[in-house]
Every structure is written in C-alpha cells, then in structure tokens.
Image 1 (cartoon, rainbow, N blue to C red):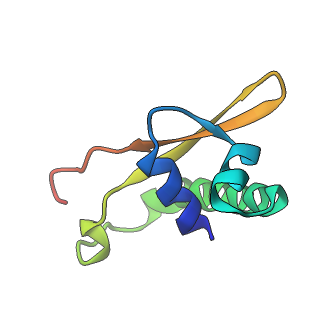
Image 2: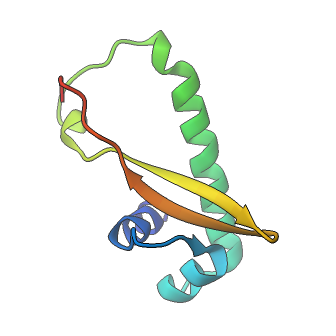
Length: 91
C-alpha cells in the first residue's frame, strides 16, 4: 500500500496532500493512509540511522529513482509531499 501512496505523491509533486485528500484520491481509508505513512516514516528513520553502518552496493535496486516523502503540519493537518533526490555519482 505504501508503494501506491508514494507513486501518487510522486506523480503529483506540485503540492502537498493531506491523509484525507490521499484517501479520497486512492479510495482508501484515512486510517490506512495514516498507518502506512507512520510505517514509512519509521522505516526512513531506521534507514538513515543505519545507512552509515553498511556499504552501499550497486545493483538493480541502485538503479531506481530515489525519493523522500516529507511532511509538514499546518493548523493541525499533516500534508505529505514527494521530493526526488539527486542520484549520487555511483548510481
């Protein structure tokens, strides 16, 4: 499910979307969106924490486009937006 959400956000990079807007666009429950975004945030945090502990390997996964989902809260509503990351020289 998080892949569907990421794909939606990356195809619509021009603005941020709330969980309610994402759920309406993808016909999913708001709770499912919130849970998926929580899991995504935790996995990104753990990746950033452990990325210095392992060597980067190039391969099929290295050829995928790197993105980061960022969130901002405005008046108690969290908006999510996709940002494409520049590829490094080894990718």
